[in-house]
Structures are given as C-alpha cells and as structure tokens.
Length: 427
Image 1 (tube, helix red, strand yellow):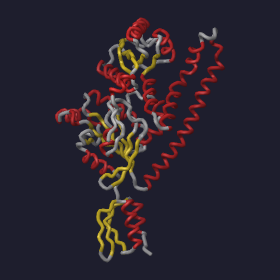
Image 2 (cartoon, rainbow, N blue to C red; image 1 turned 180 degrees about the vertical axis):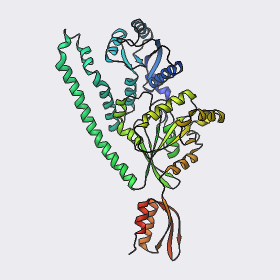
Image 3 (cartoon, helix red, strand yellow; image 1 turned 90 degrees about the vertical axis):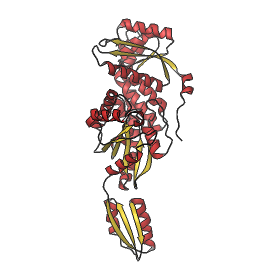
C-alpha cells in the first residue's frame, strides 16, 4: 500500500518564513515566477510556511544582494509577520548572508542551503547522511575564511590576526571531506561490484530519472506494486530504492532515485555521485516528465534533465515517460510533443496514478534491452538435464519445453549462457 504524507499533521509544526527574489531587469518574467513558485515548494518540503514574499528588480548589490533600502523593508516584514527565517532564491555570498542577517535579526539562507535542509530531513541511511554532510561541507569550504572572520570580528578587535584560526577551520573541513569521500568510495566500490555481478548474470539496469516531483516514485510503485513514499512535494526520494522486475520474461533491476532541479550546483552532484551513478551507469534511463505542466515549464525542466545527464551518462538508451497524461487532452499532448521535439526521445504515454500505458512502457523497455539469441536446445532425459533446465529458467527466457525421447527447450538467452549450454556434455 502506498504511503502518503499527511499535510494536516505537518502544518502544525511549520516555521514561518519570508521568501525573497532578486531578478535582473528585463529578465524572463514567466521564468522568474516559476523559480519563485519552486522556491515556495522547496520551503514547503522543508516544513516551512511562507507568510510573505519580497521581490526586487535590480542588478545584484555586492553587499546585500538587494538594495539596502529593500533589505530594511525586509527586516520590517520579518518583525511584523513574526517570521523565523528568510529564504533567498538567489545564491548568497557569505558577506551578503552576514549583512542581511545583521539587519533582519533572523536566520537567512539561500535556495541551495534550503535544498541541503531538505536532504538532511530525508536522509535515513548512513550513505545518505554522509552525502548530505559532504554537500554541506563542499558548500561551506569556499566561504570558510569569511565565515570565521564575520563570527570573530566583534570578539577580537583587529580581527585580521585570525589567519591561523581560519587556516585551522578550513583544514578541519578539508579533513572531514576527505574522510567522508573515503567512506563513500567504499560504498561505491560495493555498488560497482554489485552492478558487475548483475550484468554478469544478464540483468540490465533500468533507472528512473527526471525533474523532482515528476512522479518517479509513483511510477516505481505502479510497476512494482510496492509502497515507496510519495507526496506532492520536492525531493521525496533521496536514498535510491532498487528492485528486481520482470519485463515480459526478461529480468531487470529498476531503481528509483533523487530528482533533478534547475541550477543543481556541481558540489551537490559530486556529493551525491554514488547515488546518481545509479542513473549515470544504467543501461536504460526512464526520463519521467510531468506532461500536465505548461509547455514552457516542461521545456525548461527537460533542458535541466538533459544538461545534468549529458556528460555523465555512459551509452544508456533513453525512454521519455510522459506521465500524468490523465490530466490533459490528446490535443494538448500532441501539441506539446510537436513543440518539444528532440527533448523527448522514444516517448511513451502513461499515467502512473491510473496505471494506463504501463504495458506499453514495459514493451518499450523490453525493446531496448540487449538482444539475446534464441535457439532450440536438445538435451537427453536425465536428472542432470533437469538441473540444467532449472538453471536455464533462472538465466534466460524459456519459451517452451517439450518432453519426448529428449528434452527440447526453446531458449532465449545472452551469448554466455548459449555458449555454456552448447558446450554442455551430459555425464
């Protein structure tokens, strides 16, 4: 049975926040609105209640990101709305964080720190917790010296003498990063061994990928009949979930993993590489798309997905899974497909919620699997042949078995299995 988060239980524990966005003059208004809406969705996923928003059109101020007057307005809004935190859509430097916090008298974070908070909430395994900590440290290290200076300057006049302390702080971070990477490398070595083992046994790796909240976990549940947590919020899945799946007689490993998001920084990709490798090293990628969204949003999210995958994927086949088609008309869907063109290779149209189109998706996966040889195998009637037959059922697809004076097996299998069975010489 599918587990669903209960929003009525969450709202009682939400902290009040104000979201802030600075936009460049003349920027794409629709894109700016979408990014702000996404920031609000991220805030909700981190258990925040958005009680206000501040938007300013101007080029970035080096000290405050916004203009100083707008920051002072923000401080008044924080006080009047009893907000506990301010969340910026724009990436903030340590200097900007310090000065805005000083004026607003509350915690200030940016979008990427917010994502780290969500990841910390979602992390349940040792591996995920290490990846979250690694991402936090990778984010922090270029800011380390400035952070120490800001924290200490009121405690020690002439704070430029803090060099040795700052060096120690930075070295501590680098040391912890090295230790985490070393531990994660052992996890990755295990994953690589497991991946090689699966390939050696003819199991293809199929990964669900796509923009966060596109419906990957719902699709995983629909295909597997399981209860992976799903919710209408971003980054529901953080730790990958892998299961064996039968695809019209062929066994594959299906993996559900973390979603993508626009402007995903390199340090976040690097930190979660051992998780994202489940996608990067798959044989088939199911790129899940929310087909019910407006065309411009679909276009931008598809671009984000392809940019994230472009330099990382190692020769995988891709199937574009157009999900949530139950929410739009055929005319609408056809129009979107014509407009999106090259961004939707090998499209399959489904609704994971209603389970429409899943048979077509299974067939599309089956068609992309490596081609196996098919041949009729003849074996003598013997106890040993029955053991071999049992092994063939595990290693290939047995279309039929006929018993006469010999055992005739209509077998489909990878080359290694065919070679082994052809060299079989019964005792």
